Image (cartoon, rainbow, N blue to C red; front, side, top):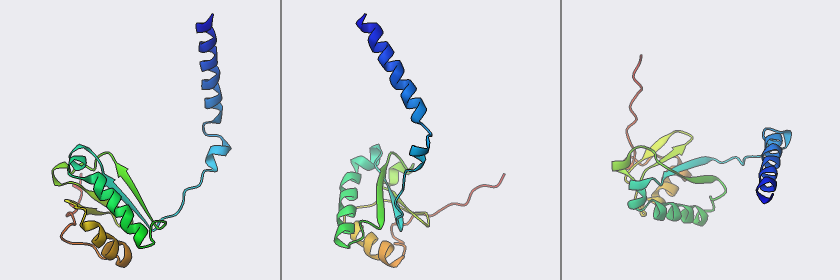
Length: 132
């Protein structure tokens, strides 16, 4: 009898969830506007090379500069340049940085995020797509 009740309860939860997915209430979700979005790799190799410390340092530098509400920093699983990590990609612009160190975070905030200047020593060359 207990098993049957728990199955019925689970079924009711699934039905309720199905009714609310895609409902007008969920479409009212709001996303805050940021000047820049930083995706910092936290995959295996980048993690081993200090990606977590770099993310923490970057967020600290942003707070110190009063930019923490202007720049969104997110950790992502893998950016695919594992042997060159830790890596980050910044939007808008799609600037890729590789081989990041904690010491680079101040320069990223001061030069790239404040003045819009790419840091050439960290920048990854973008290859154009092959045409079919």
